[in-house]
Length: 345
Image (cartoon, rainbow, N blue to C red; front, side):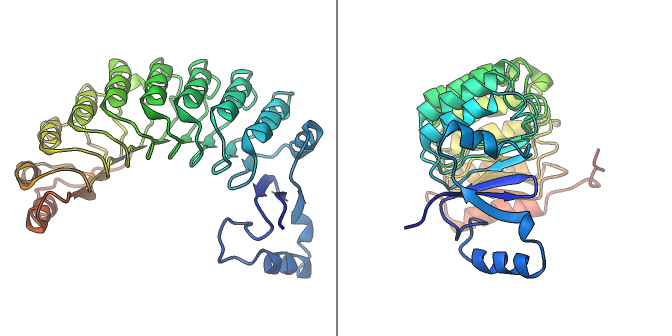
């Protein structure tokens, strides 16, 4: 049987479920890598330590002032996250941490609430990347983290990944309330795919963000909402928010595998007529929704006259439409009149 281990490489601490997954990739041979490090005299840069099991173990883990804690795909669990959260709150143990990856650890709302308490206590003031993907923290767990965000505990955050966590509308509504005061001005990546989010959550989130105009999430570049339960009303709310001048830096918007129908095509057409909305967008993912040929025909006509200076990819398809209608959208997009590509900056 294998036993969980923690790994340290330079200033980065890694923790996984066995000695065979150093890079979370079965194609890499960890034993061979360790042998190579020893052969060339670098073995001191890469070593394994037992998975922390007690408060003192977690204190030791943080003693080297790591910039990144890569604890994903392990057996941390709610208890382990509670121990880590407690250790992080003892100054200055969490002050150096810029990245915290705790994906795929069987976490629930209980663990998320432990982490939220540590965040509110100022445990990781320099945190830039937080990944909780593929756990089950739910709406209550994410709402607790959102409250921490609202207090200004994560002002340096650049990337927040909560894909596949069942946060639902409860979590998204709480996030909207949290960011409405402009506390996440540096956030550029927000991943919310696979979370059972419906129109109600999106409508509330869009209202909260839209009221602040360009002052709320001004740096947000990637917004991923794929694999949810969003329909025409939710998409209409997103479009209205963008037309209000929110998220002007948005470059990558993904809503694949939702329930967008022909009414969403009409909402998008209205958005395309607004010159400033989607101005910086390079990727718009709408494939595998519920469009029919009628909706795609409307979109095709609109795309033929839309400039969209930075847009490089648009995907719009559904089982309810024909391949010909989908190709017509792509042709209209490819052949649209385009002004000179704007310079970055």
